[in-house]
Amino acid sequence: MSRQVLGPFNRVEGDLEVTLEQADGRVSAAWVNSPLYRGFEQILQGKAPMDALTLVPRICGICSVSQSAAAAAALADLAGVKAPPNGARASNLMLSAENLADHFTHFYLFFMPDFARDAYAGTPGFDAVRARFKAVEGSAAAEALPARARFLQLMGTLAGKWPHTLSVQPGGSARAILPAERVRLLSLLREFRGWLERHLFGDALEAVSALDSTDALWAWFDAKGPARGDLARFLDLSKALGLDRLGRAPERYLSFGNYPIDGARCFAPGVWDSAVGAVHPLDTRDIAEDISHAWLAGSAERHHPLVGETHPDADKPDAYSWCKAPRWRDKVVQCGALARQVVDAHPLARDLVARGGGTVMSREIGRLLEIARVLPLMEAWVRDLAPGEPFCVEAALPDQGVGVGLVEAARGALGHWLVVRNGHIQNYQIIAPTTWNFSPRDAAGTPGALEQALVGSPVGDGADMPLAVQHVVRSFDPCMVCTVH
Image 1 (tube, rainbow, N blue to C red):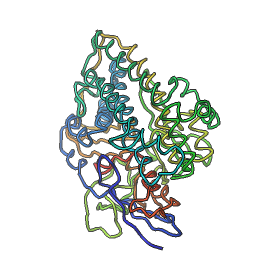
Image 2 (image 1 turned 30 degrees about the horizontal axis):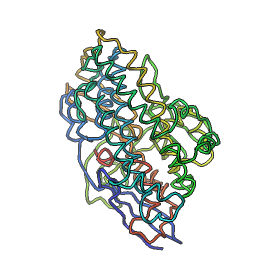
Image 3 (image 1 turned 180 degrees about the horizontal axis):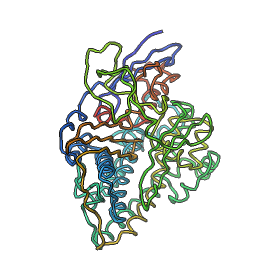
Image 4 (image 1 turned 120 degrees about the vertical axis):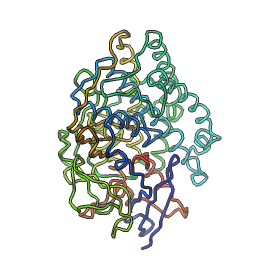
């Protein structure tokens, strides 16, 4: 039995280190370390509550709208204010644009280029995969980057700028949309739809969303094979490389629900427990953070985020990460696009996890399925905008109180917990998606989601950075600076 320390992984931020224990050419245990400390929760203490809207977007440059949306939701909860319909739709459009751009970027730039490496030479279809996805040189990046840039022009109209917009407010959106801008937004969405239907899916978005089982997915693939589009090319790789059996994580899926409109959320909240085949209602009182293996000082007991603390202790014995270990009812969960689709009862997502669990393949399909489902929602929100009617209402904040803001970022469940005393922030605690997925062990010694998913991965290919391990890590699409906020 031997140990190997690997890192960096993420192609955006490299602050991730994984220690693997190996036996018989496979991972027998893993320890995931987030080695960067940033301290945003401490920075926010003592500030005016509305300052959070300026500070929390700086947690991350690629999911800053998600942080803004969670902060605005916490402040709205504190103030007891509700955005008007225009404001809710505009806010949903900003969050969904960022989420879809993240899924799109992840697939084309962070995930698929790994399969164009020389280590896979000789596998079926390798020459075509390399020509399409090789980093820098492949045709996919040359086509996808301009499409992404055009799509993100939505942000200029909706948010004024991206990242770090101040348009997202507790009472809605500060940026009212004019009639001509509404037409422009629809045009950008239709252009992006056309690109997706030609290149990524090779089919109408609605046809992809209608796939209701694993059998239906493979029948859809078999109709045209890899030539159908990039999703089909990924399915071909999954079949050849066994990605449907790699990286299986704990079979509990957490979603806070997403895109509130007209008193409901377009994606349902809850926790799907595969062991019982049911969704548990979401109750944030079931959430607590464990710091037993984090470089943080304080009680060994788990604390709800409203009473949680963040005090660094770099010399703490038995600690190996700056990441806390959030738990739901003392259990490990995974979150992300797959979790959202499973909790929302999409039949393909449910069937994928019923047959194979949360694997590399199912997590990637969850993202692409979400693109197909959300873009039509965005088109509907734009059509329903009513220029001339309010986009934002004033939010009068009390001097004391608590607020909770729950949203779904691209990578999963993002929660902000806010405590205000005497008109200032007394406590601000954040649990980011990668905090859930990349958590260390808890006091009971239970490994986090990625730590469990890595067990069983082959490491016998002789590479310094085993490809299977990279696929598992990247299938969670880590955002490490959010993790250690």
